[in-house]
Image 1 (tube, protein in one colour):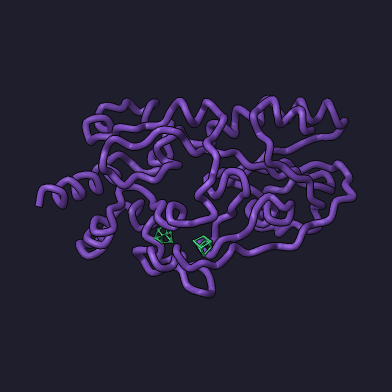
Image 2: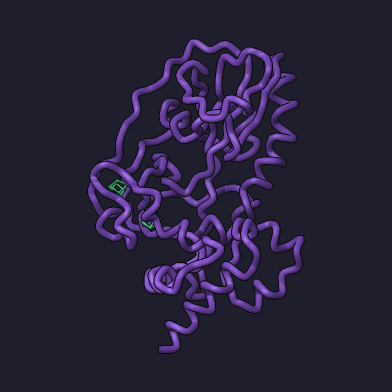
Length: 267
Ligand code: SF4
Ligand code: SF4
């Protein structure tokens, strides 16, 4: 298995017993009996540094990871099935199990106060995927470990969404920046926080991310948009636009925030 993942530049993976996983969407479970979960991390941090001043989250500057996972599953599902003689079912994001908890149970990282999984090698700049399979495992789930609880993410969070009890999703401005319609007050909050799409503040201030390594995966490093402009977004045809995470909303949403940021910068 190590070799199969290594060929794809994936080094962070673990096998956990299915019984330990938190099933969140049973309708997606395969019909046959599942015994184990292979959980893996896909790092996306790029060496590129934005030349523009728009607050666009790093995950949205690279091509959408769902496209990468689709390609990966198309190659690895048959390869793993052939190697182990059982079916493998790949999921990412739209998944029957809580992927973040699976990764933590597999010892792939600690859970930060900002609610993110923080991996020792790649920090929290990772996407998570899982394979479910009938393959039996003797592995036991590891204890879930919390971050060092330094409080920096809570201190810098513009939405005051992070408390000692964890994160209040409704207060997180990342979601607000992606809302279809904003009230005037909400737009002011998003613009004041310097956000055009998503928010990386709690990741960027986290000391456990300081030494996070860059991704070795071309799909992410080669597609980084380092100089975003309203003209660039406007000029993207539907196919190109659909390759980025911000395409789950029409162009109007990211452009609205970018125009608002331009106005603020002119003042
Ligand atoms: S993403 Fe931004 S707004 Fe959301 S919790 Fe983190 S720092 Fe706060
Ligand atoms: S900034 Fe500190 S408290 Fe927040 S996730 Fe990182 S280590 Fe934990």
